Length: 297
Ligand SMILES: *Cc1c(COP(=O)(O)O)cnc(C)c1O
Image (cartoon, rainbow, N blue to C red; front, top):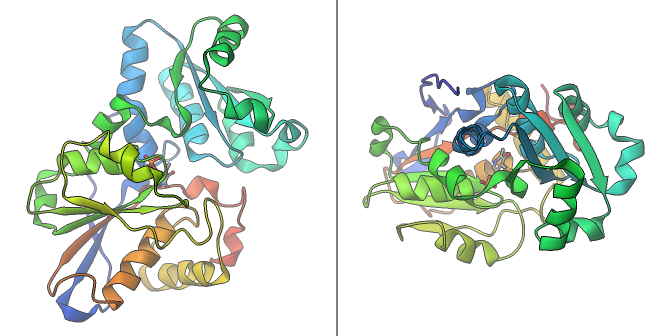
């Protein structure tokens, strides 16, 4: 299960001032469907489900959730039934227009659409009790997939050779990925997280998942909030793709990369810094909310 192929870090062949160099860890290439960090976050959860003898995975997500897509694909590949509890009852009629949900269903996921109000109660005991009655036994994976075992999986992203980097950068959603990165760096390295959503609550969440203090969240590049973009961000994705050949996603990795390059220009990083940006994937989400034609060359 989950055989990992080794992929070289890719140098970003752009000119940066102050002798700064930028590399990308291509986690997006780890698996064709279980993309990037979602592969890391599922690994130990699926092993635990197997150990417990549970062959159904149940999880939660929105209409273009990379986590829903990855859980469905992982279930298919590793022999689990999957159930996706999806935010938005109205989607039940039109979800076939949505590539994320259509593909999840093709991969065998049973989709259960619930109202936004019910969705807000998804971690409450009465809600979970009802799910148990409806689906009997399942292994529950939280929204976005973040739990202790997900963090453990993300501690495997960085390798021995990545010790040469001064800064490790990642997009942040629920915080599990950046927490794993933080736990696996050395004192001389520094981790920067770029939240894709508004709000400072993430600092406390991540604090609760990590054992180190050499990290910081940069809250200036959410572009209006989760799954919001601007024409400027879309233009950036297009130019970055043209110049480097690397396709980013508009919800997570694009915002991080915009932030890194902007911070380089604003002299945030010391002279000669070596920066490693994690490409956490998310490319499956194109065309569910944003048209890939907008950034294709
Ligand atoms: C889910 C996701 C993230 C955020 O990961 P968290 O562990 O929830 O912080 C970042 N990038 C991409 C592409 C994702 O799909």
